[in-house]
Image (tube, rainbow, N blue to C red; front, side):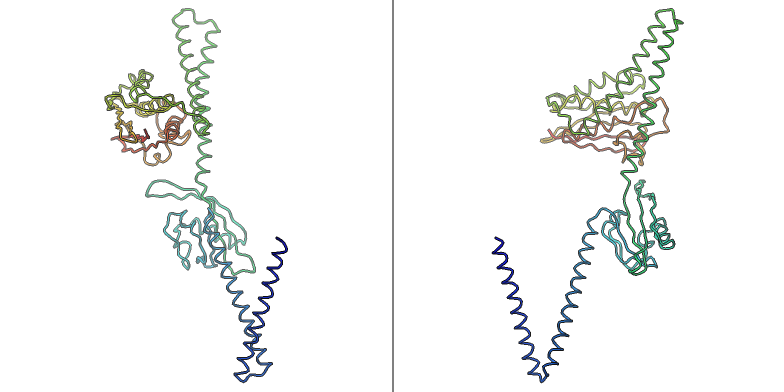
Length: 405
């Protein structure tokens, strides 16, 4: 194989040498026909060689430029190069995508295209101080009431290059949200676990002191301790459930059951809270109860968490919770809705996040670590379904689940 390759390379070199010789011979004939002397013909050939090399160099430079731009268009960071007047000389597609723009035009200034002084301030500081500047910024979107977090890097161009600076933009919204969720979880979990443990320890000390003599008071202590012990177990079970669902290592125990039976079990479990809130339930399910195939354990949790969420977030009397379902050829559409206070628009994108708790202005009586809705979404996705949320505050909030059958 090596010998054959060597022969091929030698043949290619010989062909190139023969082609070069034939080209020079042809050039000499043409120049002599034109009345040029031999040395003039050689000068013309040399000039021609120089032009050819320059053309090759230009083609190579153009090729490298296009390759460079193609590579920068594929990276996840937004990149731009500006001159000392802040006019854009180069920009990749990602930068426009990060700022939700159809495109960014070269030749215009950064402030004209991005319309935010925070970014231009970073670039101007880099140019003024002649060093690399890194800064985190937050940009709010007034249209959908959300905000994005960006890490902005800028530095002057190398001394051998033209004056100006390069700019790189990283979208760190997910990392920022994850860090905030982690902090919220630590605070919420610590509070939710510490409160029942403190109560349990208090009743234990009371019982140990021997102050209580009558059996009724002692029994009351045991009931309170049992209630808060179950609450701790519930918090831990929720953490383990979401961990299993998110890891993807939890195999589903598939069986046949009805949606009505899941809903009824959830209502039986939440009966004390239903009575306390004075809420009413409306069911709109098929006559056969709505046949389903899936993991009954997770579907019990889905309906329990959705109904419990409505009850906890709407402490005022008069709450109506409607649970309905429609069955089609290849899927069913289930929904849980209520006529409560609703969910604020700025909370909607995050309600299914782990440990996210909206309505922080609510009474401290509302318990939970914010895992319920995250468990609901993960359980439905594990069954190949999807869940959507719509809310009109003060009118209706609806969780719609589309699940294949």
